Length: 171
Length: 171
DNA sequence: GATCTATGTTTGGTATAACAAACATTTTAT
DNA sequence: ATAAAATGTTTGTTATACCAAACATAGATC
Image 1 (cartoon, rainbow over the protein chains, first blue to last red):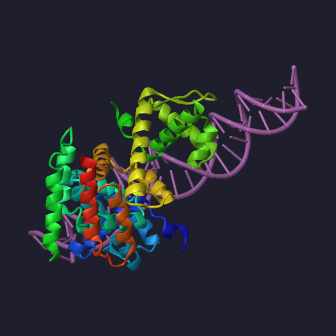
Image 2: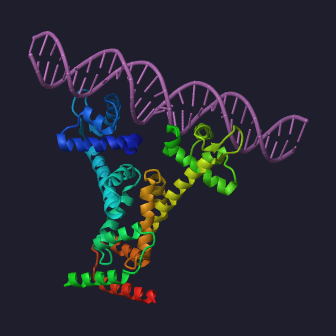
Image 3: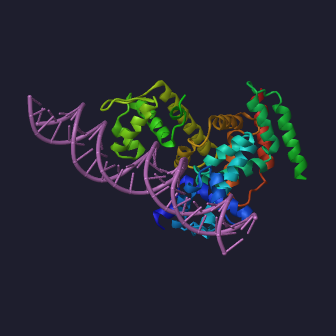
């Protein structure tokens, strides 16, 4: 495996991700649509496509449609998965608004390796499955961060509810 | 505020962060040390320093020592804070080993905006302060991710312990 | 089937960021 | 005080990635 195969720039990762999403909706990707989604001019896309083709990640012939190779598809799906996981965490756990979650996920997807993402997935799962946490615990986070002084007054009640819910679900 | 002021490349952010850390240990930063920490040759540093000086982020005269301006210091500390928060989360919450936590934090620090980091800080705090979670809950995450099948057998005991600990701390 | 329009490519130029190696300056040691 | 060593800078080249605008091709319309 040559260097150019293993190390993809963030930029080229973005191209792959976009090509995958276009493949899903349109079967194939077109330069015009890629340019639009990347926010660049069509001329800039051609260069990127040559680079991706060199690395064996897309099937590309000038003036023809673009599809991902097996290898390109694997990478594109990996990045798309990272994106989805991060957006889920930012929006549904940290409770950031959808736009901000999306913007941050777009950049973070290039910064985290597989081990970190995999562990984050397990962590999100843990929150949902552990009887001590769950969705209501996440919702209670709103009370925590939205108030200057966190009121611990309701903790007794909250803990009781948590235990009661567990007992109820156990049987 | 001109464009060059507000938008710093990840690369220049790294330089600022390194200059700050060198200032802390050596009062001033030297080209040689910056080059070493950045993993580039000395020649590459000079160009970056000119760029940072242009943006008013460092005090720089050829052949002289380098210090951060007020503005540069603010940005450098902001990035350093992001780095610390992320490393803490990756290592002490997701329980990634220190090296991997560090590597991921290095890249993520450029990807997350202030709102996302601030919310993450609150989330970490919430985990520590909420009676339903806390340090022992994080430790139990090890059991969750390290086993193929998560055993819910000990949940009753864990929940009881959690309640007992809360009652004990309350008085 | 020729023409027009949309789409894709090429070319020349810009900016960032690095290296290698020649060169300049500063500091250290004799 | 001078020579040597360490440190800092410059220059020319490379690679990525973009734009603008000229150019080429393909598809749609008449």
